Image 1 (cartoon, rainbow, N blue to C red):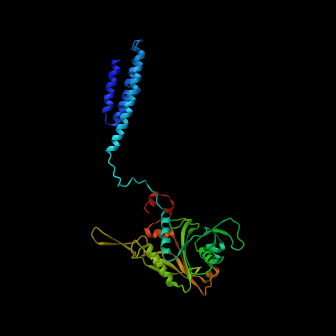
Image 2: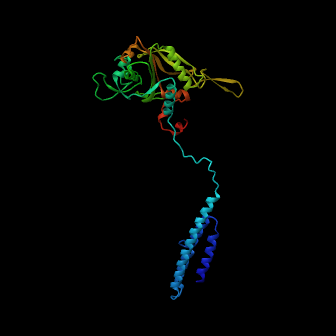
Image 3: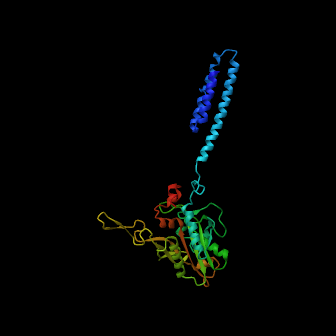
Length: 355
């Protein structure tokens, strides 16, 4: 009995004076654990006389319950003291959880939409599955045009339309020109059409699916100067205020006259040359690896062909317009100097987090 009382006094003192939760846990194991003092006392019951075994067992159970109660109270008190000792500045920002990021193509679409909305263009998005007539015939492309074979266009197995022909995955956003003219019926038309396009190509500068944005403006007395002004505005807004734009004569079936659009390279500021200092502190001229000539090809543009206006039920003798088509992946590559279009679709978070 004396030993039970001594353990009671010693344990009570140690538990009530411990100042650390980890040390309290050690005391709990010391007294209440499988090999603790309480179990040792129970093991000694066989050496107690039969007259005192009942009383001895009751004393041990009382001690066990008492120590359990004291440990729980001390545990709660130590937690309360710990919380009070921690100073909290409620004006400090909380711990931020990791956030995802928008895909660079999504960012570019938002930026392009915002740029053109400031000059009165509305954004449209037409179907990714199109009829052959709207993708080619209505855009002044003859049946023998090479873009209409299955090396350039993805044909679907759906039933052909009596008037519009075979069903295809749209190879460009230009069919949206016809649909927009049909929808509005009468100018003025200011449209920016952003959609997915499909061509069976796969290399560093082409993917089977890509994004394109189509701009179209149709009204009375629209001419090339309006086209050049709109392109200057977009390129300087998207690539930077120092960006210059030039038009090179070209040929597209659905525009006349037609042009390729070039912009000055942002890496070399249009000079075609990068400069770096050598160890001799002399200037070394290095040819720009991105453009090689100071200019980068952006896409195609031109005045809407009269035949296309007719297909859109608009009188070409009364109205004129311009249109362009640029690849979104391409404008991002030009802006940031990305050298492989396939990076957009690998899902590599290290690439995506840069934007």
